[in-house]
Image (cartoon, rainbow, N blue to C red; front, top):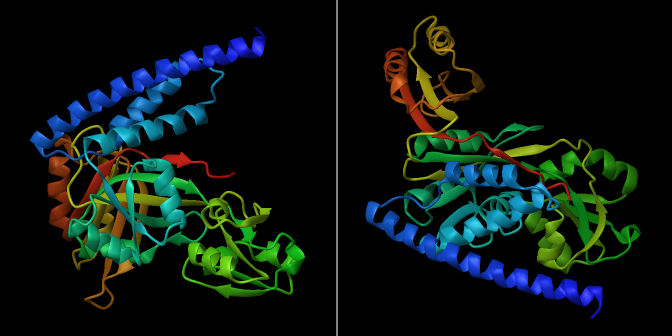
Length: 361
């Protein structure tokens, strides 16, 4: 018997053990689902899942890379959630957008992803119970905040359960195999802007046509000769396109922060960040007093941004990220003090610090 045959036999035996253990884990997940059904509890537990991943990474002796272990277990956790209860998740569509791809990498393949035409559709669908969770873009490290998402938190009573950071990297895809044949390039306006210098250098004569999403760009490139689309490399697999160039973005360290929202608040302990929005009382020093409340409590503000209040001219709503779990009892007096100094205070949710999903492939 050759060494290769012996190794394959051992691999087969290990695979059999893995199957048995995965099925035992699935049985336990079903039991967890029954308990959660009785308690009317939400299935998605981001802090618990991160605890599992961190523990496994710490226990991993190698040579299996950390990234591979995490990817495998994200799918195991996705399957476990599906066994407990089928989970519908709304996202800014269509299929193949960065929002969709970030959701797939973070929540796994066992989730039922439902595309919505716009960000408000995600908010409305979550409120209407069309999906247990929704995924929305909040801000980009280069372009700044998505104003519509911030505005919709004022209009819809939803709660943040998790955040994730997804690396944005761009690829040129086409049905053509020769880049010299490309005359037209489709993509989202922001993607075109982010690849502007590369396009001027490599395809200076190509016509740039902005469309509503990178996925729509790939769909058009699929049916139109001598055209290409800019978007995530995974679009090539989704739409059966050829990859003509990779990493064509002008600035490589580009991340988008996504939020996972629900119509129900998350569990109340173990969180590291809290997002709030507030409207100040119309009096001198109001913002200074609010900031002083946080400073005296030694709470670090990770983000503070103002948006025009739609109903009233020259008034603003503030969106803030705090580095604390504002749901803890120790902050009850702080919340009461904030309410005294604000016309409106809304706690959007407390959640774990987000994972950075490295999509630079």
